[in-house]
Image 1 (cartoon, rainbow, N blue to C red):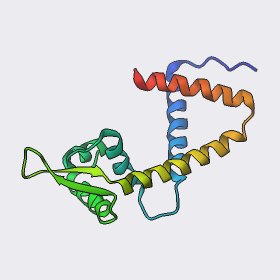
Image 2: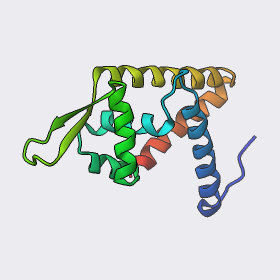
Image 3: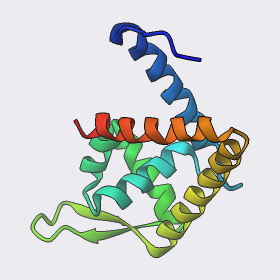
Length: 144
């Protein structure tokens, strides 16, 4: 069975929708706990980008600084984020994920990977090969 050729302008919304829905579903597959998706996202940003100021984190997460202050406060209360003085600006602080924060993210990633691996195991070999190739292409698109 061959796929019908679809013009890029028609493929774009189909692909975007599929990626968005899959991403949403994978994000929902998480260990039982009371961290919100927003808190996990902020913690993940700190892991990926490294230490940053609250303003930088708010910009990365695309939220207003007062919102980020609340998010960081809750993460800090749980020992998942630590504040240290900024090395050159006494008015600023630097945020970083703690070892506990890293461990929580590891748990979330394991839960998400297990959920997705379980779904992939239900596919046949040809479908998994197609998804392997699609993953390579999506990585290529993301790097472009």
